[in-house]
Amino acid sequence: MTSSILSSARKTQSNDRYYNKALLEIKNLIVEYPVKEGNVRAIDDVSLTLYRGEVLGLVGESGCGKSSLGFTILKLLKGGVIRSGEISFNDINLVTIPEGEMQLLRGPELSMIFQASQNALNPLQKVLNHFIDTLKTHYRWNDESWQKILELLNRLEIPESRLEDYPFQFSGGMQQRIVIALTLILNPKLIIADEPTTALDVLVQARLLEILKEIIKEYDLTVLYITHDLGIVAEITNRVAIMYAGQILEIGDTQTIFQNAAHPYTRALIEAIPNVKDEEKKLLSFIPGHPPDLRNPPLICCFADRCSYSQDICHSKKPQSINLNFENGVQHKVKCFIYDDRYGHLFDQK
Ligand SMILES: Nc1ncnc2c1ncn2[C@@H]1O[C@H](COP(=O)(O)OP(=O)(O)OP(=O)(O)O)[C@@H](O)[C@H]1O
Ligand SMILES: [Mg+2]
Image 1 (cartoon, protein in one colour):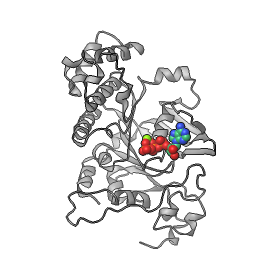
Image 2 (spheres, rainbow, N blue to C red):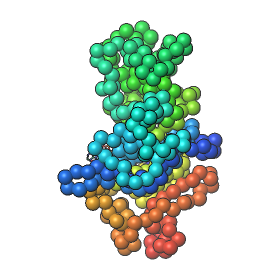
Image 3 (cartoon, rainbow, N blue to C red):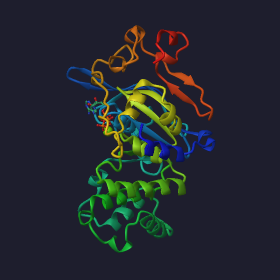
Image 4 (tube, rainbow, N blue to C red):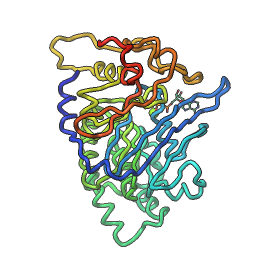
């Protein structure tokens, strides 16, 4: 396990104040993409709660359904269908809400920052016009707007002198900062950040992460932070949900996940973090095998075929979510038979 990542996770103190009021509650959500050969089940019975003022990391391998979950919350799924389940945002039912009402929520209430969201900037519009348009579209242009724009430019280290420039005159990192400023200008209650720094080089990414961390604290933002990078999770999140094959296999406080991961998949993910300073220069570990084909979602544990702990039960039934108790009192859930009182004895203590 990478020690530098662990020390970052220690700094991300768990704090009870986060876990009082739910802002977003998802229950037993199933989302599918109908395709020629059947249905791709991108979200498979997901339940999770996002509390006001917390940063919840959503982590998993490519194709496990992270972006689909983000798009489902914003009702921007292209080609996907919500088959069942509930999504409640601030007590509003997002599953049944009419599109006209949803449009009023997107931006001022719920917002999403995409991996390459700089593509969303209009090449024919100066940066200043993007701010004016965003505020006017949502009827938020007022006497304080100018002050707010300057404040955000300053926080995101975008020189005010560049407001008259066009998007193509900025670097990728700077364009991403403009997109983040445009998101924040509307004060959204919930931000879904889908790999917002992945397309950037390491140093630009590090600085942007630092700024994001400060802004999240300063503005008391609630964020669902989607990434496949556990280093970022350790840096920025309070809690983390581990996603695999459309399911949440483990969810808990970030520090606990790094120090006491319960699910064999989470452990394998943490073991696979490369460490350039590793003096032993040990070979990178990896998880043999592939995630299951989501066109035929498994009726057994979705990780069983790749799990070095698996027993017969894992290949014959689907595990339910089990609550684990850790000293910090933050709710921790895991989907694995090892922790099920009825089946735990079947596993060797490895
Ligand atoms: N429009 C679509 N039509 C059919 N299948 C889709 C569509 N969009 C996504 N999928 C499938 O749904 C599953 C989840 O995809 P999704 O993009 O949500 O994963 P992800 O975790 O965000 O991956 P990544 O880390 O690569 O961004 C994948 O199997 C993907 O191929
Ligand atoms: Mg994605």
